[in-house]
Length: 495
Image (cartoon, rainbow, N blue to C red; front, side):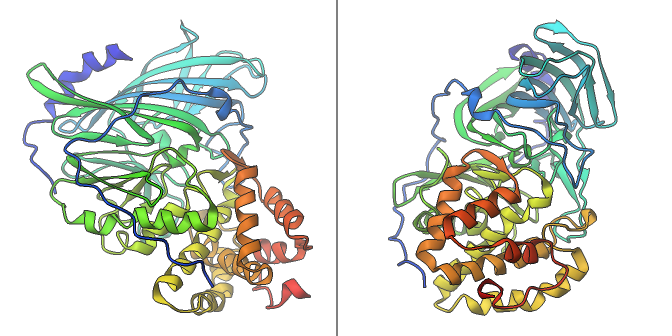
């Protein structure tokens, strides 16, 4: 969408006025070598998207059925965005390549009501549409299996979406603007639709190319590999355009966008993979906290196998939380979020949650339970104590959590992200780990990832895999932990 960028560059540049720089485990891995800070961020050539990787079977979500739709299997989003900080205005063109998942007379994407649609084309022809609330309905029939290209041109002042949670570290999700006009996005369980048209449900993974144009010296950060950075003078001001490519499919809640005055640092894992850090210019000391990410990758790789993607970055934002956005972890700027255990937690999610994602939000525990156990093992390993010290404390809280939030796999939809989806399944996985031993447990954990690479899965698939690979009858054990109303008794595995 080259035309859009040239038409809106002047508005983007308008934001330049008044801006200034802002703000029993395996042995420990060997230290990760570091490199000097980069003067400019490295780039990598774009590749032709392999659309077959992104074919999936979208479903209507059982917890949040009003978001996402099973008619569309999105394969690739090409987003061309321009942000004007002074006006708090986003201009966008989204080219969505998709497969019709079933026959239908009309189809729908999610798009925030604060964004005005100016044009919609389907396969190069003008398409009739209606945009009411968050639903963008295109009045064109689809035949199951056919591929199409939808182009949506839009603009406006995006607003975040109320989050279905009582957590204290976030109350909204999606496109968030700071007082200075910087941008960050976190969108679990949904909220990507606050800034681009999307099938906003985790079963529909897609590939992404994202271009972001902003007033220089600011830059836009998104998922995947940085393909190019260019600065040009248009209409009396300088703008910077960054292009990013995510070459393995991601659920929409794992997509991120951050805009601000960022500097770039990098180091490497023990295997030599670069890890990139995008840090607000006024916070150079933050790198000392974040650089542990490379060593956490080393630690995780010893247990879950090689890092599953072609790039890894961390971007520091004005949020108070952290999010495992795929290949580009989004971190808030406070001491807790910048701590090694939280960074490790979000890095583990690149395997559990990103490489393999839940098909339905009732199974978010598949992400968080294993990741929470890995965090506990990491903390015990670093602290030199038995992980049982942490797990026993979580077990002691389990009944209270079930009473307050519901079981991990059948929680109150108004209480998304409660501690029940973290601690309770972590205790479950630890009991299974102790029954099987570390070697067998992590062998199965790795085989699960390999068997379901780049897909979205159900709990039944997980149950079947662990039963088949362990040789144990686990139905009663899993059901008690995931959907039971009371804390399962100790020794259930051996009963």
